Image (cartoon, rainbow, N blue to C red; front, top):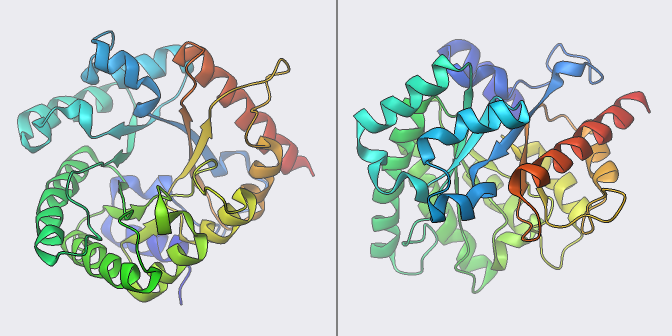
Length: 301
């Protein structure tokens, strides 16, 4: 089976996709090059500001570039407030980011109908809903949308349902530059071996995984990230709380970044700060520092 990062790189070269620079494989590239990774940020970091009205969705990309020096941005579907089907609204966001030199990376999609639902009619509804997010991501020039497969149940039955739902969505996306990536986000999807089995069964060039530092539940997070990185189109560096020295309390960032560095992955590593006892800008700055420090130590080792 072809490594999906290399496969995506080759496909993107042929299509001239806007996202090509985001997910280059190490094809012809030294692992120790400083430009191998880009730091991004996930909009969910600002979920409380967005819900309260303190931050407007359209202003989010400019805010993180100004305050954090980050020009690779990921979105959350809910702040679109249903306007993702409006080409005018999405076009405004695309124009703002283009004018500010910002690259749109990914949309984190939480839909009410599940792609791996036991009822086929529910999967059909989910696919139709997710198609609109593929279209939105394509207009924005995003690399991927993140989807959920968290209905659970028998791992074998759940796998076949996930392959059906995600596979049909990947077929819709096959003529676009948008990938469909599953996040470990509950039940069977927290099992890295289950996720890999889904990828192998799909064997689709548009299918992938979004490794998340903190989302593998009872499974060893370091081994889980290592296992799923070959299928990654982006990586989520989630942070929740820091100690007095600025280290994240749940994840050893140096250890995790060394795993990422030693893999074949190159592309965006996105901050997702979910702490409740700190301003999201301050929490994002601390997470960014941990990523930079971890990558530099890995590069020099």
